[in-house]
Length: 298
Ligand code: GDP
Image (cartoon, rainbow, N blue to C red; front, side, top):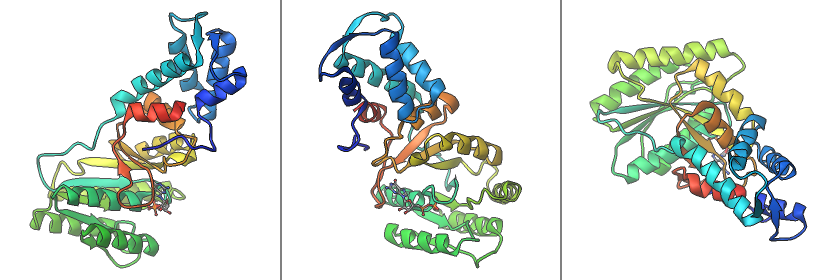
């Protein structure tokens, strides 16, 4: 889980620092609220969400004398409240194979997340198949094979430059024939040509539906938390390209920009199925709103 880093003081320390003393009672007045807003915006929460969060804290308490501890508590509670509805693990479908399409820009952590997910499902006794659907990036296919080996999961590949939809169809056929529980399909993340990418994703969906009309059961968008507010526009873009059903937020280890998760929850309400907290195979954790709020408010 994300921990506040020693070199990056949490909100509380910064608040106390501004006030001059570690523990001090202060009025929850306009000045105080403005400071809170600034601190939240600095955590990449975005202006709209920061204003809403502080307004909720002020409601019924404006002008009251509060200690920085109490203010931190209110802030953490409010953030946890916003995050509670989106903290949901990946829903498991009764029908197998459950097909999970994984989308996101290159570098967001798609490959790593697929490896981590495969490993978690394997550890839970499930059989998993991975399709290396980013057929244009030889390096991505290689990486995925390494992750598949680590997780003990077969990775289906196709020659460089070949049709990802045809690979996805073969993977569906294999997963069904073998009675696999889960099929994870990697996809390209080239946003340079959106029309192409949209057609590519649509074609993958079309062909896998020939094998199961309800597939994909989940479309996971992988987002890099360190990109801050950029993550918001990535959600908007991918919602146009694919039917995004949930998020995985990567690189939450050691970022001070975690506030963007609050903005995402506030704006889109998409479930956060898991968070990436490191580069190793076990570094994928369920999203815990209270732990997150505590880490963010430091
Ligand atoms: P892809 O291009 O979307 O497939 O991204 P990759 O899975 O190759 O990841 C890009 C880089 O981010 C790699 O160096 C990964 O090790 C790193 N990465 C992925 N997830 C995490 C995470 O949760 N924490 C950290 N610290 N690094 C991550």
